[in-house]
Image (cartoon, rainbow, N blue to C red; front, side, top):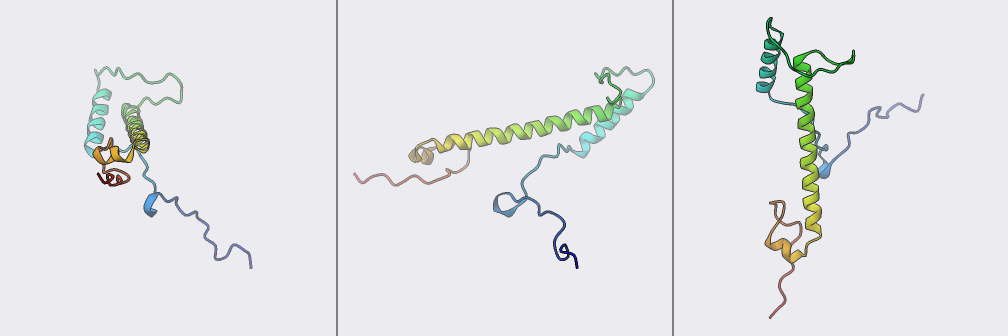
Length: 123
């Protein structure tokens, strides 16, 4: 018998905090936006229409209005998500540099403080 019997052949997905899979941005957009893009693509293909989309010049570049714009919008969504995560991490990192008493008074992220402030010394 081979040594691979009884072993799992697939990897276990990476786990984020609290045992959940890590969040991922797919760049997906709503069905309404998809519908609008498809209608605009039909309009761009109609006879007499002028499409001013700056398609690439290489042979591998798309000539499809829908593909071009849906890819650009998806890339913008992923970029915005990444910037949001980066800004949130910077704000949380900044909170770690503050005095715990300051954290009790205000929070830069709008969340409750990460740690509680010690009680004031007796007067």
